[in-house]
Image (cartoon, rainbow, N blue to C red):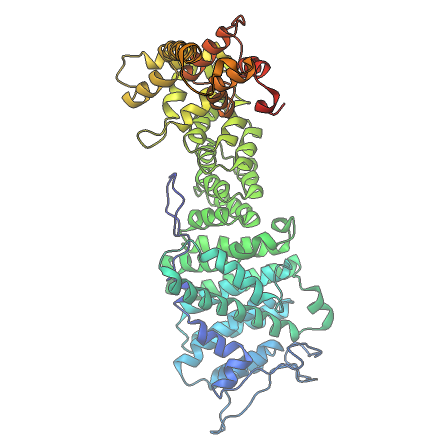
Length: 595
């Protein structure tokens, strides 16, 4: 799980591989009790579905007889000892809402495991209640099972919390039994890829979780197969039915009492949030304001009242995976229970994974106000879309300056260019020495960010940009790294410009000597003047033409200014690189410049 508290680093571990939800109740055990194939392999009473689990059965609810057709309802099978499998028989009876018969089965249970499993099976039925009569019947049955000696309340609450979330996911049309395997496999791969422990552990954890989700979907399918056709097709609980579900769950908690610790409630909260985090991005828009959201919010609220302490942890996790609807619900729960959730840190997680809807929710509904950290992290990664999102949300000028230096030092020049266009010039001028210093980069000798800012004329004024570089190059303060001072002194200072001019003068003298006294058989002075000029200045032209940005380093600029002056053209020091190069191009042969 993510750690509590603010931090810049994105946590490597979002969900522990040894999550208690998946260790308290083994997936194989649940699968054996809940799916036909696995039960058949073990020679136990199986739940038989006909025509690839399609249903066309109708049943009389209440305590009346069961009508079966087309083999839809699970069949009770007697093993070689003539004893009826307790768990599967109880499931059959609960599917048809025969509460009196269910209580008589409980009276036959003569083993602790039977009773404990019976309690779990009874809790499964909570999320499929339709009437007040069903509510009363199930509450009485659960009380009867506990009175008979059921003790494994932890397993029951963990299992039913996971099932409740899957019921909600199905009602939102995010999941169906048919496409579950493909969706689950992909989502689990995305979910576990950042978890530590190696590929083998991730595969094992993914397989175990997938079995749990598939068990829950199978359970949902079997319960709804037992209902009338229209209810099954509707696949959605009304608000009144949701209240029945929550009332039954609350009654179970009252019965369990002190048998459930805060640790169990915390694990159950995680179990309820996990499927919603996994599949929330598939939910229909506005899901968090419907009856499904009322159900899950009520469930989570009851778990918080019982002692769950991981609301913030699940909140951060939902933000990391872009589960916007769950984020909304957890914000409401935190507000209702006066719990603190770290919306600013959640915004860091959401922005790191480009979950824009979740980011908007955290800002507009969660009132996140700290944009600096996610903006800087996005600049560090070079994520222009996230940077644009925050700029459109009106981040401060100082925050954009810090993001510029981060983007430049990391080599993300497109991001830096975008940010520079949105920072007022007076702010850049006031902070220009600090900006250049911060753009130096993390490693010694890394000056690409500094060069980019200077070449791009980041102050939008050539004289001012050259001046700030020269001021740092001639500084004597101790807070400027010496290697940065040396770099600017060598390439971008006024002294570097003078050295460039001197180098240009020496080059001209050497070319003149070759023309007048050279013994080369090429005989340069016999060539056309444009050709001779091209030979003399082509290397300088190419160096200046290939330099990126609006401004040239002072050393190279000095050589170019000297060359243009030697051609008899008046030099305007305010001219930019393109103007100076145009002079050389005018004197060069057209095939040299490609004109």
